[in-house]
Length: 192
Image (cartoon, rainbow, N blue to C red):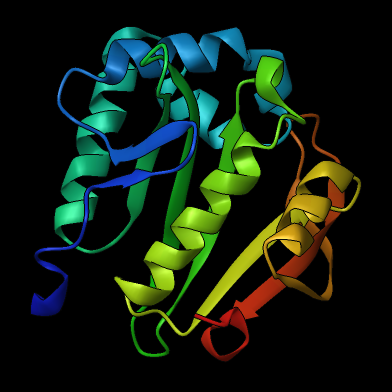
């Protein structure tokens, strides 16, 4: 356990959002977000839909597991809440942590009605900053489907560089194996 992480921020502010650690009873809001974006998320996050998207109770269990994993320093999962409406509109996490490097992988999505409005750019940039300055990670990784051009542009926009392609790395819910594109960002290149 890294004691220096005991007092890290649990809420991050951006211009339009509060990105915060989940709290007990956030499961209903998370279920609404998943349910409202089910078809959009099924190809990209099938495990999340299977684990948390079937009922409000499953979503609450998922939220509480996220809280526990935060406290155990295994995963840092946060909801993205709009400032003006306090509505949950997205999800972002730093997971697959390897404290021996230290590094982590990032995954994220935002409600489809908010795509291409710049919200995810400000959120991702803020969580990258949190990851390097508070979690003290030295490297971050993003993996996208080879045809997810929006996520690839987003990764590049906040400073990630393409590291390569991972052939037949991801199985779609249909059973088809597809390629992933891997992006990386190291602390030295971050610039803060």
